[in-house]
Picture 1 (cartoon, rainbow, N blue to C red):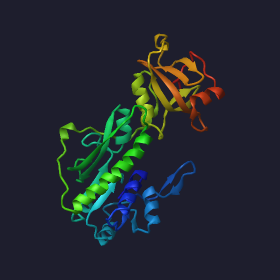
Picture 2 (cartoon, helix red, strand yellow; picture 1 turned 30 degrees about the horizontal axis):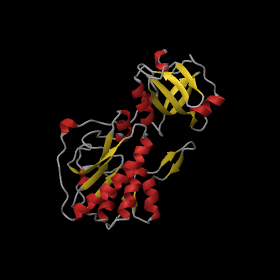
Picture 3 (tube, rainbow, N blue to C red; picture 1 turned 30 degrees about the vertical axis):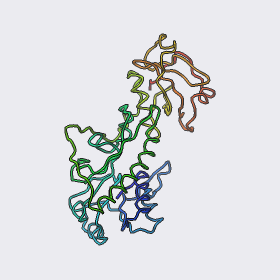
Picture 4 (cartoon, one colour; picture 1 turned 90 degrees about the vertical axis):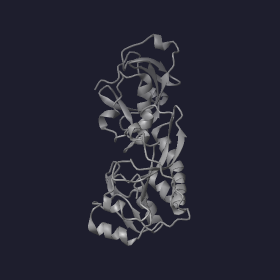
Length: 311
């Protein structure tokens, strides 16, 4: 059971393993993109590619869906980024239970946005975890974990891609151990739990009053989607690349939060934060492609003293 590309990588790994995938469950088709055309999920695309039985229930308690799922007689249900909590009737169906691959080192970052939240939180290490599922969100017993480093400039998109591969490998190892009757089981320490709720639209706007490192982490965490933004001359300017500017002389100049304090024709432009300064290196003007800040400056000149962040 799964929906986005992260889950499709795991499905491919299971298809390449010695285990047999008897069917796939994914979310109903939804409109996507600028044209809002109905589109298949990456997991559905993979299921169709391999001719696998497919279910797309709107109601996980629907008797027809439960009957169809039961007809597959699964020994184990594997869930990766499915996007919905499973009711007891689904959890109790397979004799070996339901397991989940989660993109964090549980019990930290339980919830829907662990990758983005880990980046935004300035974490240097995260990972993937397989657990036995319960009716409680991401709180089941841990089976296996694997740690992954987060380099200082890594974006959420880059971390997503790496965790998808590491997670798929961990998932196959987990299924191997369950099939062999040798899977470990460790209760989570609920007192250590933190949560990673879905991103809210109001979080996308850069608050220049924040510290420079926090702003850069926000920009990394929102890259590639949905993209952090600021306001310039009443229009949104999305920011996709930035780094904290170490004290190179300009820090002593200072300015108001959101003020452009330096323009560097070969690197980008420097914006004052509440504490420290941020060098902007990649942007996306309205209706345009993502471009380097250097390219942006050629077509949209900025002046020192210009204020960003004013709607």
